Image 1 (cartoon, rainbow, N blue to C red):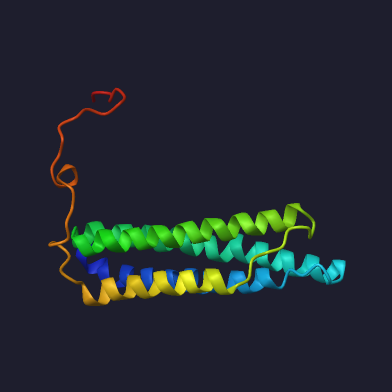
Image 2: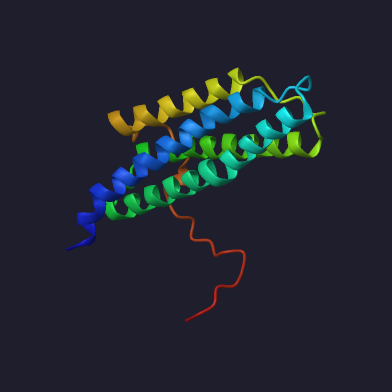
Length: 168
């Protein structure tokens, strides 16, 4: 058995973790929108805890595992193409939205209901755009080699790192 025999299993795990992560990212803004000042204290606490636990125990581990399995797939399949790097830029957008949602959850919890969570429409539209962009790049695998890229990004510059690297 070689490492390449694991690719279908890793791909299935990656898709499952990615589905859980993106579903959670779409659900969390909806949950945040339910944080209403007019709710009873016990109802507000229940919604806040459900949002917090969903983020910490489901969505964040799914994100970490989706990224880890995706990174393993990149190296196992040796896919180093321009469309992959474009996909990674969009995945960075997913990570940024993930961090913003986490920040909003913490802010709502720490201000004891004084912070007004944003409407769920804006993060939902951003997420749908990122998800559709990733799907287009992965499924179509467009030829992006002809995109204009600055010369300093196309060749190594031969510079040393700004710190000492230990010799082994």
